[in-house]
Length: 462
Image: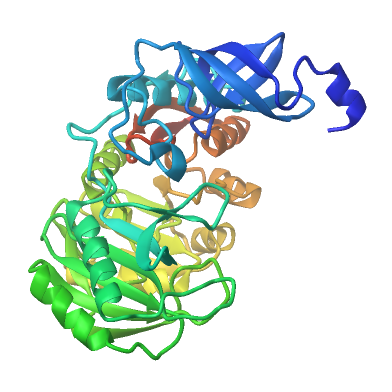
């Protein structure tokens, strides 16, 4: 921001101001106003009166740090995590869970109205969890060395400084146990810890995966190269200490990168995968497999998608961005045929294997671009009665939406992890002859700012 713009702003960096929080931003920060200027304050809860110190001033908004809660919101609670402010992973732990669910629904309502320019859409109350803790079945802990001991935890927001933790309250207890035991064993065996500044050392990350439906656990030890002194001994001791461990794997990642996993994995003890379920569908999970991190809520999410698809048994369903086929296999049991389209070839291979493993014979999977493959299917005479799509966070590219409209399914079921891109795409579909009837938010990630949605969209002339 220029000096002139700063001079015109009602606030300046370093200034302390008193503000009342009236909403939440898309990243979970409190939103307030000061003399007409929007102020974002991480850690604020709607209804709070806060003393905040301005950190950054832009043309249309400012960011501020929470100094003190002058008058707490009725929904403010004491977060149980001792490092919640340092870690930054749980942006909403200071807000009562029932209020989190209401605020996430409001986030969806606001996005549909402001970004999608949609009105009259029913947005249902957010479907939450009975126990919104310890739900994550996958954890990735960077490992470091500080004050003569091994540490592990999470990177502080916007940095590569590790916040050392004893446990994370949203991780499965087995994930926390794996992290703690690896720290202890790495220290006892004198494993050299990776230093990203010098690109030296051995142990970089600990990844833990847990099968909630089976109780099986996997530990993945990510190393800076193939050499792993005492790796076999550590693996055997881990399995002896944690009976639920059925797999200990070394993943080799010698690259200077922020990507956690490398291309090569070696089994150190046990087998190379664990097994888990979504509903009664069975999946084998390797170190690099994509699998939803909250299977309990995934079942809720997919159940709602199945309901919105309105299948009677005779339909052809096209599942776009199908990944490893989890939604496709749910749909296949209630329709004539499912065709999954996914551009990642490895995921398509997994989808085919998952169909085989679950004895689903009416699902087929295509590796390719949805905008190209859908018209090709239409040329082959395939008529899609329902299209289900679960795109990445950025949403759909315009050609994909145009291809959907050209195929003209009676119904579209849109699964989204980002209310903003969902609202934008639903607005585009409205201009192509489709009406959004209802949206169901689902809380897949309690205590964070994320919210998943399922939207039921119907052709206006259908």
